Length: 252
Ligand code: APR
Image 1: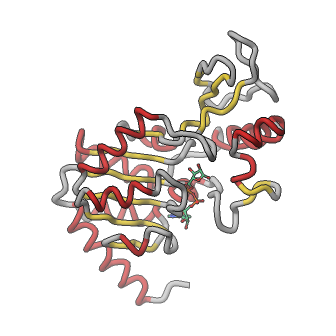
Image 2: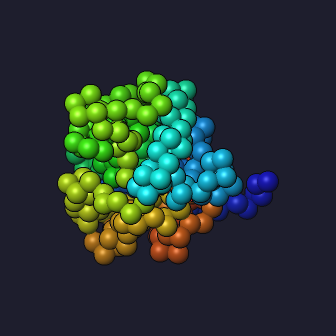
Image 3: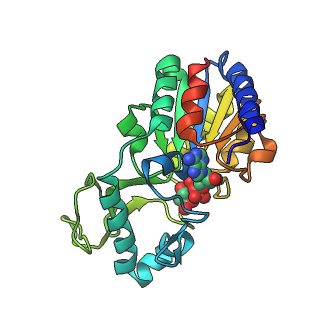
């Protein structure tokens, strides 16, 4: 239920956010699973955060893959198949429009592995948690882009025959170093940092919010509810990113 007071509060917050974003020539964005929720993809935490009773922390680890690769692959096969059926939503498109406005001053750091930012036309994207369309050999580390085509139940490397795995960052694994360094650089040098649809509990990605503050940037958050980051942001836009982001970009 939306009380009229809430709508007014959101409108005021949108005006404040537009004031911060309008003059900025360097803008960085951090997105999480929430931006893809309106495309029909489940988020990891919260009410839809379980897969067949497994917490994400139980299927997205190297230990889980060693213990039960069939189970882990089953989870990723489903996610890949799901991707073939979904489209970017107005939130993704609004970020692509923001990049059009800013050109090289825009950097999109995403924790998402779904590829929907690319599909919406964003260009300068740093996928700090990898991409589900890619597969990596657990033996020779060769990476191949398989799109969203169906894979064998247990895919094997064409070069060395070792078991392949999704090219995503699991809990306990390091982030791709060069990509992470670019993200840190963009966040430290931006004037305005937009945090969208993330619970901000998974590090090091969530640490980018502190880093933006350290670098002197304004921080705007878009989320349907308060997150772990909300206490430290300048403006919190409480609402679904698929409506809030287009509203924000329209005001610039
Ligand atoms: N608009 C905006 N925010 C939304 C929406 C929406 N329509 N729907 C949900 N959200 C918010 C939720 O309130 C929550 O804060 O999106 C956030 C989703 O949080 P998580 O499920 O924890 O996803 P994320 O923050 O991306 O997780 C980080 O954890 O599982 C690992 O590696 C995985 O990249 C992932 C990382």
